[in-house]
Image 1 (cartoon, rainbow, N blue to C red):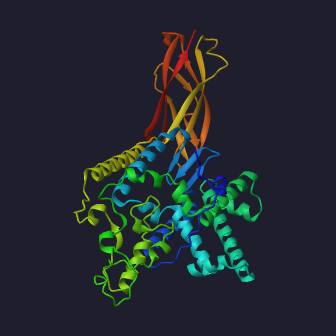
Image 2 (cartoon, one colour; image 1 turned 135 degrees about the vertical axis):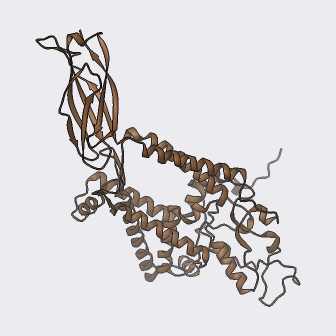
Image 3 (tube, rainbow, N blue to C red; image 1 turned 135 degrees about the horizontal axis):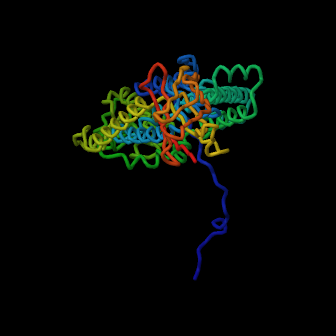
Length: 459
């Protein structure tokens, strides 16, 4: 048996990375929408930690104190069941939006997309247009190129640092964080996490870019499971565009046997992930609409109808009627609304009090000189609201005496331990172990209360 192999075929060649994607700047209606939504997203991200509500930072996820403040609500680890509800709402909304509008989230509001386009804007501002950047990278490095690239990376680093410090300000009070920064008083843990997220931002938006969307984002992988033939997506009208080919503006494409696509390749040059939309639906596409804006610009120059590349559906491209209201969309919409209403209801009826009862482990009970039986407990009361409140502690059993101050002042978001003693006279004791109900209520709102049951031991 003869093997027809060449020697070079047996050499293990090193991995060769893909060529970088040089994104061309593009203007158009979809890019204006993308820029507006991106700017709104960044402003919200930056400003929310500086908003005060009822004397506190409006959104503060204080992991050290295990308190998560969201405007008027304070959540504790015991409320993590609400996190499951939030994830369910997010999933249903994701299914609904993806089935209806495709990857609209990726193209307009995903942080990876917003920061990538921001970094590209800095790159274009300092190094020039797409063609100029390609030319610079192919030529030997000059002082001008070195200076421009150094300035670019410095600005990228500053943007990444500000992004990371803003993100950390959701977990540490923003005013304290930046005051400590200017006084060089950050501890090691704060410094580590800020630098960690800064490096991640710098690497993701500055270097990885489209590779995050293509290789690392799970959404791009399972989106096809939610698509159907009526899902709105960015697509190329192949029936109208083919056969593609270059021509002069005054040429008659029908006489040349050509479609409307002039093969200018702008749709590829403006794509942030470097794909050719004319090759059909691809999981790499983030639906940013840059190729549609570029194509509409070219169609206008040739006096052709716009929309060769547009937001459309598979059925619309085939000349069929696109259906907006379909069982899948209706089902996801109803589930999303129900899940959101359930979340709102759960938060509204949530009692802003939580308390637990711990028995004294030193002794089951104590006897006084009159043979009265006393049990000792430790009540841990949590004020889940952001306001300082007076709380009343009462025992609901008529045959049990409570020895504790009726009104306890607890500051907003604090947990207070209160020792209490329950006493029963010998005449009132009917069994060795009985159940006792304790109630904690807000002094000026007695309807807001929490009740728990504990055991009372006697001889």
